[in-house]
Length: 336
Image (cartoon, rainbow, N blue to C red; front, side, top):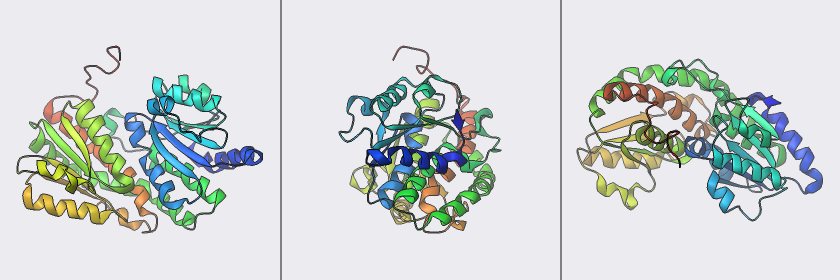
């Protein structure tokens, strides 16, 4: 049986009931690889900031298998993200979760795949499967990152309580409109970006807070994997502790300005870039409309906004470079 995003409240209630006589839920582990790891970053951040009682961590799948946390077991939930359900490392982590008595939640796009046999609850998220993800016709409240965050929100609310629960769901209901409008807003500047950067061999991404995972995904999944560019995702809070020394007038930066608690970090980094760099692409969540969401919860929506605006840039850059996004040298082609 598979579930949808709106079933998450019921799923968490069932897990808590099942675990009640075993001591309850004491830890929540998010596990995935690559873009699926990055997509879980907001959920991990939510639990770190909002939960005082339930331990939470985000761990890469293969590391989770080879260096399993000591407390992981029957009092744990493991929430794994695996887009097509065939990533060997994540399958191994799901199998381990099953063997150790944890409640296993799998976030995936496909209903039928190898990983689903290990899931107690398989949640199929919304995904724009159109070429280069340009259609933008999905309900973004049910996309992968928001499903992961909803697992955390429901777990907190059904255990300790979450004062901003209603405000979170109000914001969730706004996200499809916010993202669709933002994608339209960047259409022209995306074409200019592609023309400006089509001959570059390196692009750095920058971000912070709950939205940092989007900068990470853009760097490793798009610029490195799909465009074969040198790249790194730089946390704006870490920028002044080493990375800022690479800044010059020729080096390209793509920086996210989040809405919420870590915006000051992003603004500080941008101020420096505007002084010492010339080639800067700014994605400002406030400008893109995210400030309609209440300030108490807006942090947890930055990732979904940025990550679903990036496809407009990615398509235009790939077109300008004549390097289609599905192009690979090694992935799925050689033994690794």
